[in-house]
Image (cartoon, rainbow, N blue to C red; front, side, top):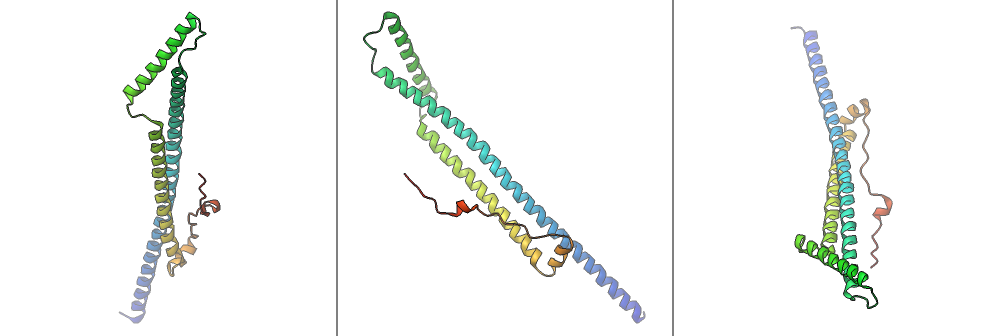
Amino acid sequence: METWQILLIIIVVLVVLIAFWYIGTMNGLRRGEVKVSEAESGIDVALTKRFDTLSKMVDTVKGYTKHEAKTFENVVKWRKGMPDDLTLEQKQEFMQKLNQVQADINVAVEQYPDLKAEKVFTNLQHSIADVEEHIQAARRLYNSNVSMLNSKIVSFPTSIVASRIGMAKKPFFEAELEKRADVKMDF
């Protein structure tokens, strides 16, 4: 083999190696971009879960507290006794309402012996904490994937491929300004 042939083989091998490196690096960057998109979608899923869960929980709590308040109101009202100046018809109506309140209380106690608004609110608080933890986990995963991709994008020689394919650094998820301030608790 002549020198020019050896030189040509070396050049072809180098070009092929550079092409494989370029394609591999480009594919790695694209996979990183997909991971960032997937993590961003995870945030959307967690936010949707928060909206759905908390909307349903708040409606349940509102409905139950309304029911419990009405029942308590009726119990207090009927506990005072029957007014003296009622007609016979009004007394019968009063007794029917009293029987209905008692039946409502008995049904609630039979079906839900430990049903209390306090537990409903406690469950709501636990649901809120659980949902917020899922959102935080999704945000951390997103930021982790962004960090890995951005590190590749700015590192030489991968930065050459990134700039050639028009890939720019991705933004990190950051808390809004008002959420960075210390929480004031007024009781």
